[in-house]
Image (cartoon, rainbow, N blue to C red; front, side, top):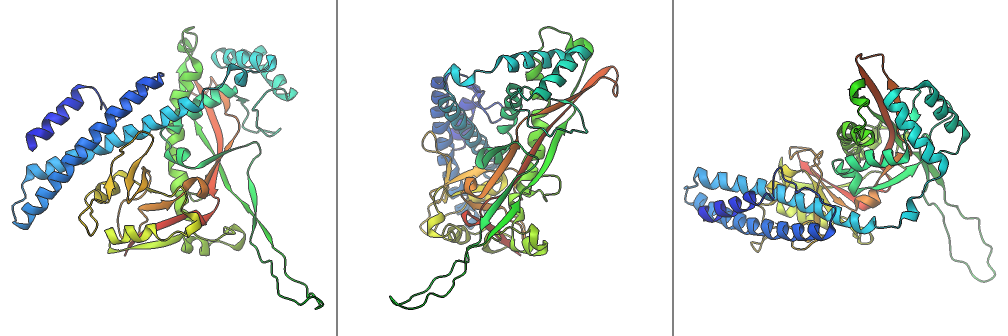
Length: 446
């Protein structure tokens, strides 16, 4: 069995299928589909090997004869499957994006004013030419520039990057900031976003044909303001590099800021406290809500919880109970969300009939499965420990919304870090829970 696994791993590695857990993305959808089919075959072969090895380990443990090689093999297979499943998820998203993004060129037409602005913006960013800067200022004041998305008074200065640059930057970190792929993303143009919630309250009654009708209560609307903040980064380059005519400046900026934006946003949308940043999906528990002043509490209340039933650990029974915790009308689109360490623990679990709870993707377009529901990776989730919430179960798009203020703003600074030119690049982002009824927390018993 050990030789079989080593041969399988060698074949996969030599084929270049896993350099760092992800296959490089190509523009040809047909090639992506073929790569995806290969990945699915590989992960299922590895999972079959994993199950056999785990069963052997359990039998050996009963006899007190577990060896180090078996444990190492399980660890290696576990990592291999995690990387492979991540690659499958990435390819599924890429293929879906290629299918959705196949619109006509007419959809991407921009005005003559925007075309001129885009060219001027690049010239200004590369050279700092004051004459071009004056043109940018006039263009923004004219109101003809698409996706300006700024207030009229901006004490931080800077100019709005062309919408294509905004897309390049956002597309760059959407692959890393996982919540952006799972949640609803809503573009906004103001400084924030508020929503009125109907907290019901309408009453009624039964009467006879000629009876008096007493006055009844009406529904009440309660406003809720979502938390916003600014993500920023300050990439810098020498003037000599900027003068290089071969530089793709938009791509360079995107490459510099995408990772930083993704790290900040990924953390905030999971566990952020809502102070100058989004409020994270894990911060809507009953205790946190109760500690807030009345006007900051969510009108629909807290996310409900299901306990694991095991002290400082997960249990198969607890996970099964979690799937029955959502109301009947809120099961559509429900999935599990957890980090890789938690997935590793669940891969070892079986139900009462000896079947593993987790399985890898069997078909293109589907994630790994846990008890028949999709299992999604969310790296910023906590590890399993007493009183933590390592697992979410529900429909994330119905539960959480990320608010994207339209436009990336850039300030060119050639003075603060000579001989470098700094580009203070910022984007306003908000986030918060839209509806708690579509999600459950799985809290580890203390």
